[in-house]
Length: 93
Image 1 (cartoon, rainbow, N blue to C red):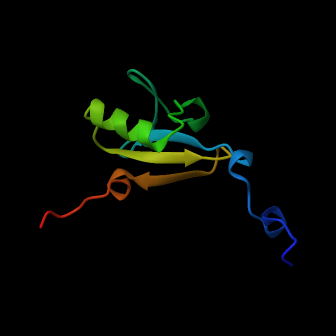
Image 2: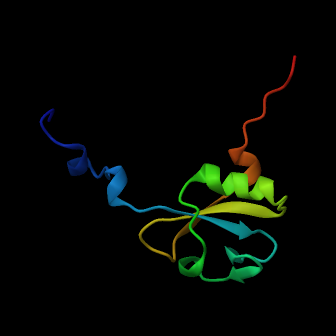
């Protein structure tokens, strides 16, 4: 049992699944493709690659009504996360 690798238990190495980090407008369901360009196809959307890059982009351009969307191997399976779930807020005491 101890000699088995993680892969034998269904775990996936980080580099074996390529995650795309996308931005999606909540109200329309469209993905950011480029300046003034939006698409309904996640395969055509701009890949920010890192969550931090996507969040910085939202902040820099003061975008609203946005959520993060993650696509792995199957572009038909998209996992979305509201932006407020990504931001850690600390109360000041």
